[in-house]
Length: 177
Length: 293
Image 1 (cartoon, one colour):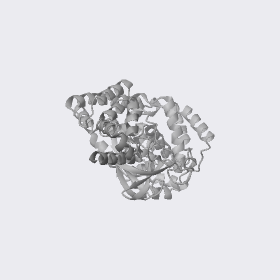
Image 2 (image 1 turned 90 degrees about the vertical axis):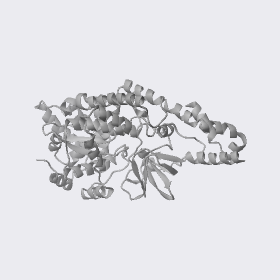
Image 3 (image 1 turned 30 degrees about the vertical axis):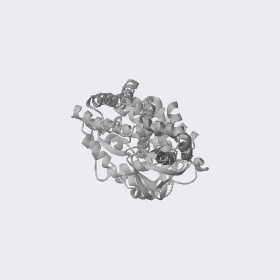
Image 4 (image 1 turned 135 degrees about the vertical axis):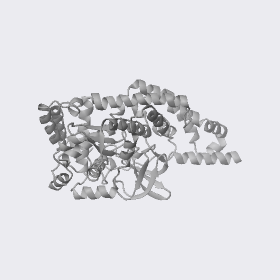
């Protein structure tokens, strides 16, 4: 009986796993609309699993602790086979480009995890990582990573970019692919 | 991979059925899941199999090597300006998000027209190049070109296959997250070789002509999508053509295809794709505020 319950639970967990994507970037915003610079409703961090409601063009509508919002395909893995750069600009700033004209419902169960997802999740934190970088620094003491750290700290807020674009009359064009 | 598919298919059978028919088998497979995933992992072969996180660490080391050769310029005005233009373009690119995001800095080299992009999104342009720009459209074109090298993973493509094979072989035998000293030493050696491959390509040899042409096309599309006049690239290439006609300069001229060839292809591409826009007096004035004397 206990074993059956455990297996049922396992099945439920695994079935749910088919409807998730995993974050592959340090941090990303879950946005209220499928466009960059749209207000963030939540944040997600590296290796976080996000429950997928559906896929719309290059965006996934996900549920994060009850909050629904959009994450771009280039920030996650899983959900679909991914070759090369995940992308498509048609949806980046909203609007309904060619690829968005039909919403793609993500297969919710029964299809299994995709190749890329399996491998990337299995490899999280492995390979060329901080541990290897430390050793590399030891071997190459004249190469200064402090400057790289400073460079990585340079950031611009979404609000600043939006204001800058508005000031410069930059209206994103869609459907360019 | 077939084993993995079968295993996962079994594991994903609806729960009640699992409980009745496949209980023992499922439990055994669950116990072996790490080994199965390990098998999947071992099939990594090419640069496309590097994870975004690995790309990030490679990019950091390449960036550190570039910054060992040049002084980084960070000032209160141009650095935010460069990064704001850069972010607008990155989000319009084919790869808007990378592991650590895109970052843009100037390198102090007044006599050198050059730009680099390290994997993962570390973008550099020399003060010599910046000074040669006429307006924001041209700046956008240059930044979009470098973002395209990141998006198209041209830097990673410079890693020799022997180094990648070695890395994946070491990783394929190691399942733990923390490596022992021998594995770290081996991986570091391969890492070092991979960084050298990329730095040599970026700084010494340059990308192939076809990679540069591809990056030009991506740059035109990206600048256009972000709202810029995509003819900024052609305008900048025309300037380069003039400069290259009577100058024996290092850097860009040595590592890039002739500007005249790029200009011709860029104009043809924009015309074919009907990508056009209008220059903006507001943006021209804005660029003037950030000009380098």
